[in-house]
Amino acid sequence: MGRIIAVANQKGGVGKTTTSINLSSCLAAKGKKVLAIDMDPQGNMTSGLGIDKDGVEKTVYDLIIGQATIEEVLCKEALENLDVLPTNIDLSGAEIELIGVENKEFIIRDEVNKIRDNYDFVIIDCPPSLSMLTINAMTTADTVLVPIQCEYYALEGLSQLIHTIELVRERLNPLLEMEGVVFTMYDARTNLSLQVVENVKDNLQQRIYKTIIPRNIRLAEAPSHGLPINIYDPKSTGAESYMLLADEVIAREEEE
Ligand code: ATP
Ligand code: MG
Image 1 (cartoon, protein in one colour):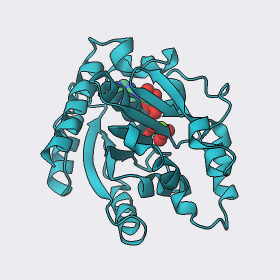
Image 2 (cartoon, protein in one colour; image 1 turned 135 degrees about the horizontal axis):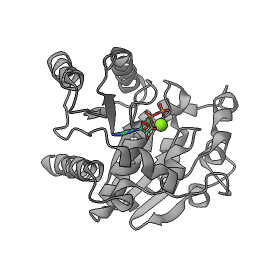
Image 3 (cartoon, helix red, strand yellow; image 1 turned 60 degrees about the horizontal axis):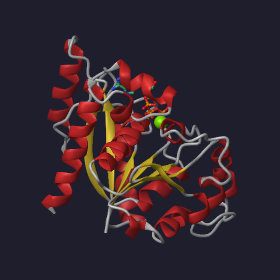
Image 4 (cartoon, helix red, strand yellow; image 1 turned 90 degrees about the vertical axis):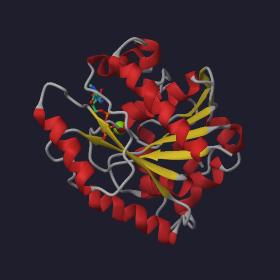
């Protein structure tokens, strides 16, 4: 049975979506069967994987309000080995729709359980908030992967995130684990990036991925072409590092 990884950090702009898109795509390129789930109403993972988010018939929103089956929402083979549950701005209404709904924390889990056996990995891109959408991702997930941007305020909000993960584990998903931390937007030209990495390593008792994602302009460009980095520019440092991250994620599976 595959591993379900929620990519979460309530801090905005730290590289959640970039990591979700490119980790999904690199795992798929390595022959793994991958399902990518976009839980952010911004829909950037959906468009970044080449799907016209406003053109799709059914989205995660329809799934949440019970207006579509998971099979109806699924975009099959958006890339080789990669299926997507797409999202657009409609999802921003979900929070309100869920008020008073029984078992609202488990809607996505119950749907994904119907198809998870088809996949080696499920990657969930979370919104920059600790909302009901993030909770749904965390009840679905086996692990939470936390991207940390190499900047001065990197650790801000992290204790709140870890507390949320603990609460979800205690009350909703006893098997939830921390996948680990991945550093993003590392700038080798500044001491600051290095200091942030050292500081987090000293202060955070979490697994830290060896692969550090550098700041790379190609990573920022790729989404406007609807392509993941390993297809947009396979020789870029961004592509190389997400390929290495995928290797590490796979290796962890084999460790267990
Ligand atoms: P949000 O909280 O809004 O969902 P996010 O955490 O998903 O944001 P991204 O959208 O992945 O963050 O990244 C924020 C911005 O930084 C984007 O414009 C993205 O293209 C850019 N970016 C992310 N990672 C890198 C990188 N390694 N090198 C250069 N640019 C990057
Ligand atoms: Mg995002």
